Length: 208
Length: 90
Image (cartoon, rainbow over all chains, first blue to last red; front, side, top):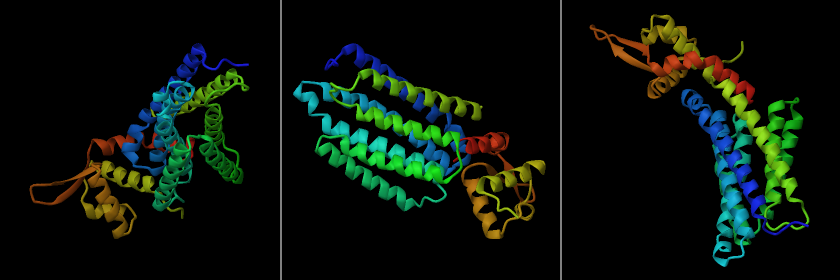
């Protein structure tokens, strides 16, 4: 049985979140020059993915704290946190998909996905539940798996997929958890950090 | 014959300028770039707008194209850029 609000575990999770955010921002900043030279759409969407993931992870920890808080004034922030986490994380999913399939993506898709994600995030915020986001993101992951399965095995796409899967798992652990061990969440965070370190290593190697 | 992608065309245009002592008239550049007039105009405008190249006039008022820093940097980093795109499957 887990304590409702263990400060040391919250601190540990904050440290992991901080690490993820820093790694994502490093990837974003390291690819700035390559974009300014190429104006390549795939690179542009790739960068946005990591910027949005950094923002989503930042708001995720805020949402987590809000959900654990017993103070009403903090709990009133919950709808906004759900909307922000929902929008930035789901759009990060879309942008990662667009980065690899940008040749097939028409500008209208971007507009439609933005409108759809904003709508779903607002609904999730209004009903104060992140579960609707989980369902949408799971559908996107299934779609991504199907897209990858059509092509030959690719290490990088597998890493992309892992990144998304562990985000969803992290999101599913939000809120007061009594039955699920907190350590499992830390394990998922660790895997996310390892995947991001690998991507950052590859980015650094390729942008020297 | 394989159709060149956008970055490959840009690389070819910039390389032609550099290999001509960094000074070439637009017409020979069009001819050497193996593009249609319309296609060349689009790339040329883009390269001017994004400051990869600039136009200079000689004493007789003839127009020449020359690379600027960003153009040289693109040529220097071209292999890195292609490697990046392939590595991350973009």
